[in-house]
Image (cartoon, rainbow, N blue to C red; front, top):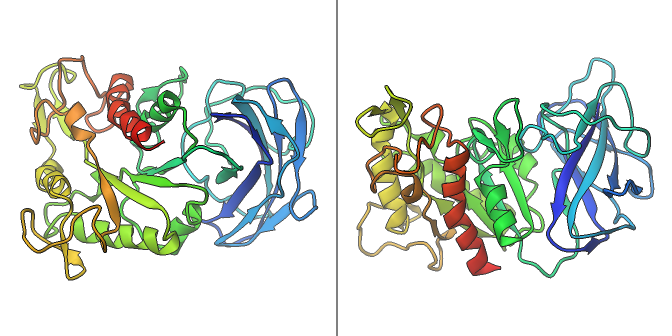
Length: 364
């Protein structure tokens, strides 16, 4: 299987290295890759001087530095992944559909180092887990669920799957910063080895935003997602002690009788009853005492930004989508912000991107 995927360099870079992981299947996978400029220049990515590399289960590979100067702007990565007869392909590091910007897919063809590519899109691509290069810029990443992976957005006009762009890509484009998306549908505060193999220690990132939350809302669990969140945050810090970790507030989840055009027509999903307590706990600095989540408003607890707390701070996103703080309903003054009650649409992602872009700009 071969894929060509489009990426963006916020500034000119030289010596990029491509990283890949095998996070989901027990068989080996063999990767061949190259970097292509928009003018058609194509340079193979070698692995220890070899034309390809084998990736074992829960392992990673990273290419040698590619001797190519990539101008600021868009470029392509070509990836061919092969498996033994009867083997399976691991899923991508994230699940954003390929977009109608010259991206392509071909089965049974190896075009990583050359050959004609016919643009096509609408598939989940196999693409680099990471593109790492020397830079003077501060880098950002997001780990999250289907909202982080752009479900509901049409930034690049994709007509299939409604997954194209997303709030984080929009924010990174506005702030003009290097960024990396780690998003998968249904993701929660999962600390399994498979999940963290995909993350690979978040290499090259200075700041990481955790958008996870929606899939953790369960009214039957005491304290909601706090315990799972703390375990996840602590594991992120364990695999990358230097990364600066942030958490966002969680956005609404409702049904509607009128296409989310009025507040009266919206009904809170039963899981939404946990949202206010969760978001308020975050806004209070996610207090921790004795290594466990403490109550909102508690005294003697450590909070975000203090020594011993895994988080640097909270990025307030929910306020931009809710009709009022803790209403649990989508605002309607900007038109409908969702098409299904959980995933923001184009306008919803635009509003989510605003505080994220401001957060990036304050740290770049």
